[in-house]
Structures are given as C-alpha cells and as structure tokens.
Image 1 (cartoon, rainbow, N blue to C red):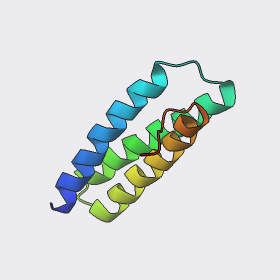
Image 2 (image 1 turned 90 degrees about the vertical axis):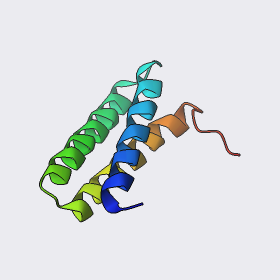
Image 3 (image 1 turned 180 degrees about the vertical axis):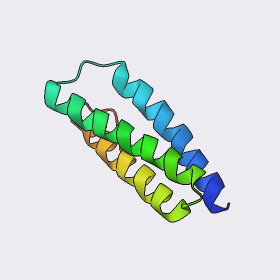
Length: 80
C-alpha cells in the first residue's frame, strides 16, 4: 500500500468514526475536540491535494487521536 492509499484508507475510517460520534450526545468541551479533529481531517485533504503526503498523514493521524479520545470517553472503543 502506498502513501496515498494509506491516507485515503484512514480518511474512510475517520468518516466511519465521526458518524459514530455524531450519533451520540457529547459535552460542549468534547464538541470542540471533534471540531478540531474535523479541521485536521480537512487539513489532511488539503495536503493530500498538495502532494505533501507526510504532512497529510500526520494530520489524519492527529485527527484520529483526537476523535479516539472522545470515543474512549463514551465507551465506543472496545478492547479486543
């Protein structure tokens, strides 16, 4: 899998996870975290178009981390 495929796969996973978070009630402070995650997702797409794959990958990784923090608070991540 090359860098572009990996980033696109992570964008798809982010889209799935953001829908999960949008389906639950979250607190105001968590809303800010989700907004930040979405901003980093947008940055991911911007840098991907600029062909700056390293920065794009860093942005989507950070976006996932922010979103996972909210998902953990609401028991949406299950240990396997």
